Image (cartoon, rainbow, N blue to C red; front, side):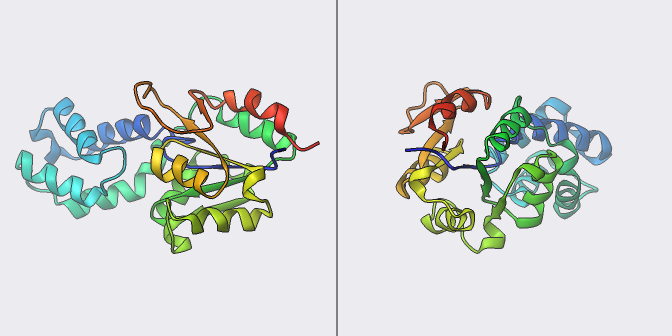
Length: 223
């Protein structure tokens, strides 16, 4: 079956969120003297632990940090607002993201983003990568009123692209929200492993670098 569209998750798939978050947290620490009652590496390490790869929203992260480290003279709402306004400045894409997307568009493959998260925040992070022109559709859970792993958001994206699930590939890093869910609606699911070689995921294919998609898809494009 030939492939007509590729749909992507954002965090951990196109956006190197771990590297981006580390850079943001270090810079925020330097800008807020109130945080410096804690040793820098301890603060950064604990922030990243509490964040849990983005699965815990930052209001809870900041509240816990303030409590654990007895931080005074700044409250969680200030730090959260700073995060919302400034995280996009530190967003870094994975290697070869532009080259891979360029290849897809040169071969007339439709491209969409399907991301969970708060609408404007995720969209700002997405546009910070400067890859928006490659995308035909962008679906973010808050704006769509539905979120992965619900089949409805995948089906909406496919309908907007005008492509059947059998002719579409989904690329993501989350075993359930991305891989199992996209396979459930009939798409070919490609797992971006991100160094988790010891994890077993029932994907149709596995990649470590976005450039690997090119060789993977080349034999399956519509003629």
